[in-house]
Image (cartoon, rainbow, N blue to C red):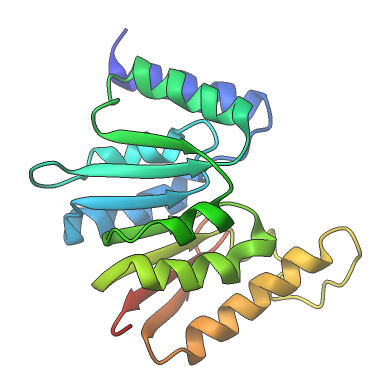
Length: 199
C-alpha cells in the first residue's frame, strides 16, 4: 500500500471514530508555514492518532530532524505508534505518553515550531511552556482557537464554558505578550500563529 493511501486510511478511520484531527484547511495553511520556515525540530502537544505529526514530517529539514509529540491517552498513544510505524516514520517522530502539563516542565530542548492541539482548558499553560521551548524566531501554532464559533461569540453554556474562557484568555495573552508577534487566522477551526521575538 502506498504511503498516501495509508495516510488517507488513517484520516478516514479517525473521522469514522469521531477522533478530532486537524482540518484540511488548517493543515494546508500550516504546510505553507513549514515549507517556508524549514523546521529541524517540531514539538507537538496532543498527538491523537498521529495524523498531524505524520503530515508535518514531510517538511522536516536538515540532519537529525525530528518531531516530538506528546499524548496523554494511552489508547491514542498506541494508535499513533501503530500509524507512525505503518508510515515507516519511527526515526522521525517520537511519541511520548505523558501529561503535557507536567512533561513539558521537564524538558529544555529548543524547537523551531510548537504545535498546540490538546486540552483547551490548558492552552495558557501550554503557551507559556511553548514560549520557553521555542527558539527566537520560532513559531507557535495553536489549533481550534475558534472552538466551533464559541470563542468569539457570547457563548456561556456550562458544558464548554471553561475551555471557551481559556481560549479567550489565550487570544488576549498572545496579543498583549511583548515576547510574541501574533495573529488569529480564521481557517478551519481557527489557528493562532505566534512568532517568538524574545524570551
